[in-house]
Amino acid sequence: QSALTQPPSASGSPGQSVTISCTGTSSDVGVYNYVSWYQQHPGKAPKLLIYEVTKRPSGVPDRFSGSKSGNTASLTVSGLQADDEADYYCSSYAGSNNLVFGGGTKLTVL
Amino acid sequence: QVQLQESGPGLVKPSETLSLTCTVSGGSIGTFYWNWIRQPPGKGLEWVGYIYYTGSTSYNPSLKSRVTTSVDTSKNQVSLKLSSVTAADTAVYYCARELSNSDAFDIWGQGTMVTVSS
Image 1 (cartoon, rainbow over the protein chains, first blue to last red):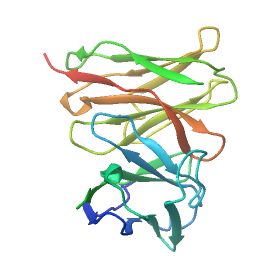
Image 2 (image 1 turned 90 degrees about the horizontal axis):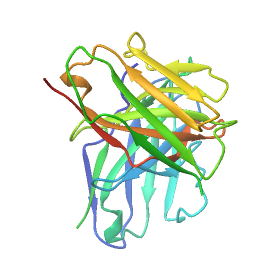
Image 3 (image 1 turned 60 degrees about the vertical axis):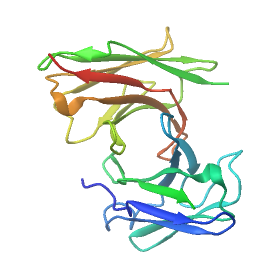
Image 4 (image 1 turned 30 degrees about the vertical axis):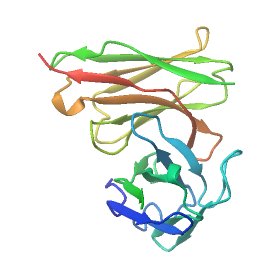
């Protein structure tokens, strides 16, 4: 199984929206609705933002939203805030009880 | 609330076995999948595998031949063993609880750094 493909970096100004893509294949993202997104600040454990493509756990602001089209999933962060500056990772179920992560995207708030 | 705490040696010699324990507090280990995820310094996340409270397991195909996990429901602990380690196994190791049947991890431990070096 190969890692999902994410852009290494993304950026936006406070208040703007930014979208991070996560490209897989017809064996993972394209066929299963088990895509998740995580936010990781330096030196901290990842935090779940989105699961099952579009669902938000309790406590996650609705500024974070997820979507999927074909083999590509996306995370949109609206109303960018300084604290959104972090690394973001996607993951997907890949069949046969396996899971694969994306390589991560470093989001910079300008 | 449920909290996870990883523990184990921070330094392991090449070719030896890495052993870590994750202690679950504030809740039961039952009815959940407990996962291990690692992150080499400066790199991304890699799923290592999971164990269900019943003892059933699944592992990353790239690590499958070297990974063993176990569960001790009486102690509310899950454990990871990774054999024949090399420098490539140097990483922060996290345990994480899977949100029911979602393949998403809603609760994470703080992680423990393991360095493989002689």
